[in-house]
Amino acid sequence: MAETAAERLAREAAEAAIGGVTVRIEEKVDRLLAPAATKYSTSEVEDYGIVRRSFADMYGFTRVSDITWRINSLADVWKDEHNGVYPSSTDFLQWDIAHNSIATFAAGYSNLAPSFTITQPDGTWTRYHNDPVRGPLPSATQNTPDFEFLKTGVQGQHIDVIPEADLPAILAGLSPIAQPRSGSSGGVGRTERTFDRRQLEEAAMERWRGLLLEEPEDDELTTLVSDYIKNANAFWIRESGSLDFDTFVTDRIRQQERHSFLYSKKPGFQSEAEYMGGFRNTVSQFGLSSTGTLRELEAGASSGVGLAGFGERVERSREARTINQGSFSQRLAGSLAQTGLGGT
Image (cartoon, rainbow, N blue to C red; front, side, top):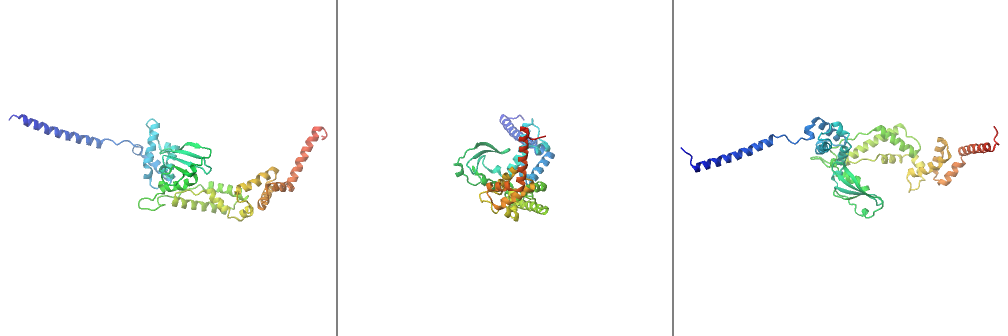
């Protein structure tokens, strides 16, 4: 039986509707089956794993997922700058921008304002642009005192002007790895840092020798460095902060009896280095032996004598007189030779 016009119109409408649904379903399937946008994590899986684990270990993250987004973003930056090629693990681990970015994230700079100013105690300041990948980059500096900046520094997460002395505490509080993990308390999620004992021992030896004019015993040095590592790791795990090594060593030196012997007469306005430096500079003018120099430094520092009186004391010492007599004899001989009276 022939199809009426009304039946034909109804059929065509139904087919069109079915066709539209079919097209929409096919488009959705195509989208689902299409490959996802390539990421460093999917394109270079092995390198990605090496890089993520290495940076997590270096900067104190136990959950590598904490830096996943940042690793992929950095890889995209590298790709844009290297003709569409992702970095190898070696490229990534030797890339200073990557290290700066992860360190910035670990330290808490990424939680600060896009621009912030660090003020110095003397009123000078530096303005920073807080680049999300490259970290804080200085954008302006005021080298003459600007005391208005000293009135505006306030601690908080969205601060703009930060006194230099407040910055470590602020960053420790903002640091992503200092925040409690889900279901955990503060400090959990950080592992102990590793330290180069030899480097620490050399630095401690130099500091000890400079202040006490002698070297520590081997067991004293070993104990000092071990105590620092223990305390530094405890502070890191608890506060996500760095324990200053020089301050720790100096505090330990100040507990020594020899420190009291050398510095009990030191004026309060001078540091140990400044106090001893004055005696060092004075005695160095006389060319004494190392033994003679040590003897005079001990005598001068422990007595608290002024530098003018100390210089006179050194000049009257037997070794200084002997040296000066020798110099005088040499100068006299030279003068006589020039006048022809010196003989042959």
